[in-house]
Image 1: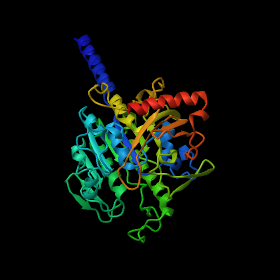
Image 2 (image 1 turned 90 degrees about the horizontal axis):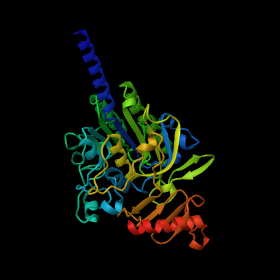
Image 3 (image 1 turned 30 degrees about the vertical axis):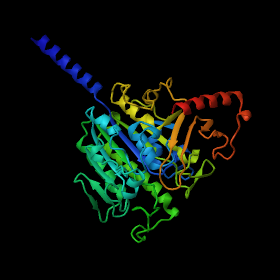
Image 4 (image 1 turned 180 degrees about the vertical axis):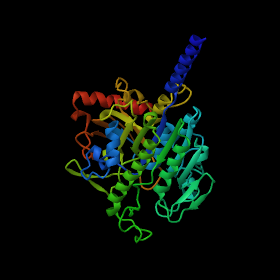
Length: 428
């Protein structure tokens, strides 16, 4: 009898351990707005205003070559759907309601899902007109169980006295509040309520997008004019963005969830051209909206205690279509069926040190249908870039694309790469 009882205890213990091993990891994705990689200390910013993010980088993996599109909506649509914009982009400020998002995919796998921060994917009258009368999506129809976001059915302020659309399905002005304080607290509460997991928390921050304003940590916050917009406040906003991320990380630590949670941080496009950063002993001007290195090269930090090697650096190319397949892998899912178009390549194996599978190039179809931005389609790697116009650039030596090259000027290796890129552009 004692032997049988002992065997039962051992078997039960084994089952509990096996169940724990099979538990799906939590996922937190944080995305700062208008933030190029040059703004973070861990990438070489000389002002060192991001100690929390620098610490996050030290705890995990820093990707040196992550690329977004040059503008927010194109990047967000690509990120959330795992598809390049030539397949599903309908207009600025709009996410096609027919599209399946990463929240939809994870929700089907038993994840509790949450978004707090910037939405800007439903659109308004002018944007609907430019999109041929098509409206965008609500967060509750895009896979999110819980939501607290700016700019759905109203615009209003994103910072001081923010206008927020939440679970009551209407927009409300929150007097005396600051947008990103509201959003990070909301996500913190969501994590606390769902600590047993698995959960997916997506935090598309409003910081550091203009208007450039004092933050609650600025000396002149209370006395500042309602419509303040001065680039001198960018550093305040950058610092406050980092403090806000630090607050969320502290919540994860407080709940003892670091080993169970994959934490990722990215920017949605390059920094505003009004901002020049002190970077690696020189200066670096943002180029948001443009298809240059300065407009598209963004940070990507991944921390996963016990899985990702602390202090590791990854030079592989990554673009925003890669996140959805990576999340599928993290959740233990099978690859997307062939009937379901997915353009990305999972970087999950790379998080575990396996670099055998990585992309050879980054593709971008950029036609935001907004402002004065012109349509451009291109493909590039870490050295060469080819546009559908036939323009060729060496982006390693000509970051600002000032000197287009002819094929006759290319070395043999460069010519071979450009011929491969021509095939990619024909396919896409």
